[in-house]
Image (tube, rainbow over all chains, first blue to last red; front, side):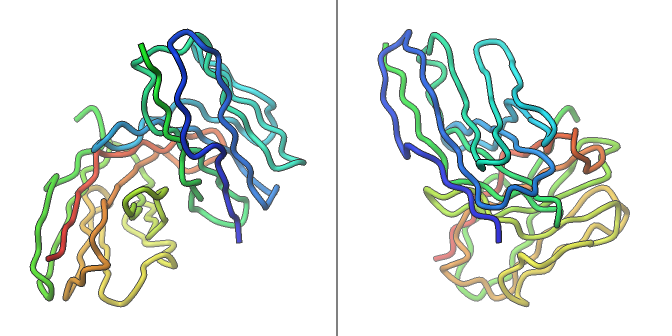
Length: 112
Length: 115
């Protein structure tokens, strides 16, 4: 059974800092890994999707990397802004099924 | 519409009542998913449809939970005889197809509170 862990559970940083969120998964037989953002009381917004054959994806100030063999992904946020404050979730789809398996998320607060 | 739409946004049910939650996926999206998100947790998979076919319902927690998508577009998640542990946010997601390159797009969810 796939298990996904995110560290840290919460993070508070001053505006302008570069930061890294971590995601680890137990089953390396994956199709892809997706990073989402969730604002309070809202649904999930897709940020980046990395296919199993890829090592990284970039979108603006966001960069996500994938090391499938070690079961790890990182989300790098450059020059953080207060508007980046949200919960960040990673989700993995394994080759054996249709579901996404989510971590519990990292709650990020960027202070002005 | 432009995104996945869910209704109602909020639902309060008395214990024992039946509830029905609606999901309108993005037009043309073949794949549709339901997830349950408890407070402070990540979403947990409930069920998956490809068009009108329910291909995976292994995440449904009990036989009180039932989902349908009769015409391959709108889906309804029904919970019978609600219990307090059913209180959660129910998220619907859709995808054009469900392949290695395709993203899942989520709705804003329905927050169910059972009192």
